[in-house]
Amino acid sequence: MSLLSIERLECRHGLLQAVRGVSFAVARGETVALVGANGAGKTTLLRAIAGAHPPSGGRVLLDGRDITTVPAHKRVGLGVALVPEGRRLFAHLTVEENLLLARAAGRPGRWTVDAVMEAFPNLVKRRHHKAGLLSGGEQQATAIGRALMTNPDVLLLDEVSLGLSPLVVDRVYEQLQGLIATGTTIVLVEQDLNRAMRVADRVLCMLEGAVVLEGAARDLTRDAITEAYFGLGRARHAETAP
Ligand code: ATP
Image (cartoon, rainbow, N blue to C red; front, side, top):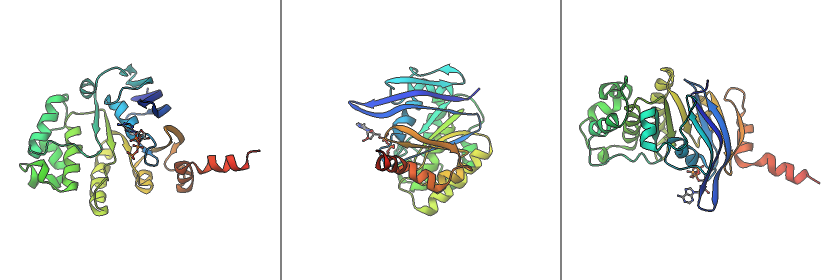
């Protein structure tokens, strides 16, 4: 059985339909990348899976259980953790305090402050520093560590590269590869196609709220994803239609 199943999910922002009938499943241990242009609906979809955006239709199932109406804080306790766009740390608290707060909201498991320090060695020297004073890469590591402290079954990552230099992004991705190697189930939003294809088992491309291409990363070409990303196939089809 899939760990996470999204069934015909619909999300709105007022009159605007941001997610249109999206369905996909994520197996335990799998890494799925959501790609698509700005405004394609990736963040809204991720937030709906985390319980931060109430869907207007469809279902979210975790391990076969319908969690569509379960509020975000309770989903954390069931094993769903979101690393939001922009990180949203408590700037005036230390790295360790940010991590411990999450631990209290989550459930028991292998992730401790020491385990996070081991996974993200760049945080060791920063453990007792206020999160607001850290570099972008250190803040991102703290945000991922904070989500891990809840001992999630599914980790949802929204644009971890945002606002970071390419070198720092490489570092964050190296650390993510370590998590993937330990069998963590991940759904991530990534603008950079090359990174998405390197890190993910499967790639889903969204366009105007719908999934327009889905496949194993090893079976998809960059050209096919780019075409879906910009809706070029559809445009060509319209041009040649009678
Ligand atoms: P980005 O990469 O820019 O974050 P995205 O693929 O994550 O894009 P969303 O942020 O989910 O896309 O946005 C989907 C659509 O919903 C867009 O048209 C966006 O303008 C709209 N939208 C997103 N958040 C809100 C909001 N809080 N209020 C109104 N409309 C919103």
